[in-house]
Image 1 (cartoon, helix red, strand yellow):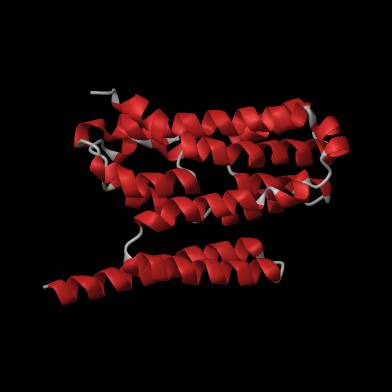
Image 2: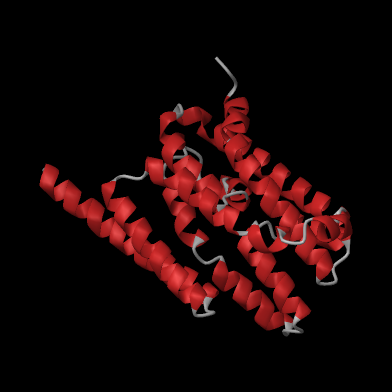
Length: 232
């Protein structure tokens, strides 16, 4: 039988393929806004959050105070407070021993883990999840570095790349999540996507993501309770 971390690496390949174009785009955008290739790569190494990194670059370029910049990035990533408990419920280790796995829990990793983690033997789940996260993290950092180093060439020969590819990250998340979502969750996902899109259109993307995450969790919970009552 294949080692669990190798299965995780294999299952993380679709995430890695989706991260490549978006990571390259981040590298291009970051250097375009004044970051060095080293700074752009370190941002991906340390922050490791696509949406927050694009926001960070824009806020820094606009001269936004650092305290406000950090606060907005934290607000944008507040949805991860809901991801952790949902995944930890499937892991046998104590929460204090899962800090490393928490760092790699992106939207797309969460989507894959939500569908496939319960199918893994209980004792092998942490290693499987680590494999998925390593594959995703490596592709994101590598793509960001490549985009930063080749930024000038890409801007000269592919000027529409930075504007058109960031949407791939959101599309990848939905493609990975929807096939594994049960009926109550699918309704909640559609509502949250609509709400987040409406706020993004109104130039309040960070607030929209926070409200959508909270509302989606509530709707999914209500739907699960109703299904449980019907089946009982």
